[in-house]
Image 1 (cartoon, rainbow, N blue to C red):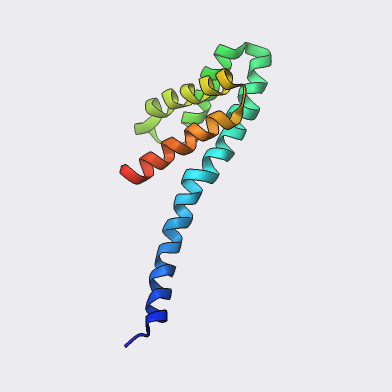
Image 2: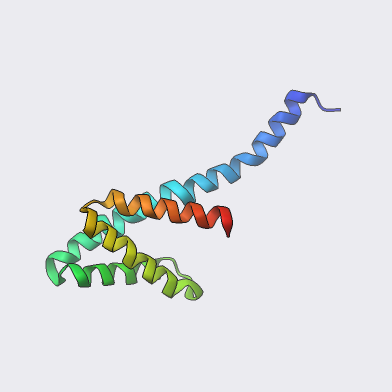
Amino acid sequence: MKSSSSARSSSTSSLSPAILTLLAVCLLAPIAEEILFRGYLQTLFAHSIGRVLSVILTALLFSLYHVDVASFFPLFFTGIIFGIFREAFKSVWAASALHMFMNTLFSLFF
């Protein structure tokens, strides 16, 4: 028979990968992706092709980056929304917050 501390330890260790995955998907990935796509690429493209086209091109690259044919169009339109947030709020953190919120909703409910 296991002691209560041993049982607690095994249940905690089995939850750790799930919690780490949730943190990576809901916190770290959105921040990294928004810094790359909206913070760097969208800003870079805006200087050469304009703000509207930079939002569209960045959304296209964002959807291609995820390498999921079935989700291409939803990711493309989501990328456009993130790009609009970036432009409207003049901050990559607004897009990051929305991205974190959306990833959390999808992780918990789908």
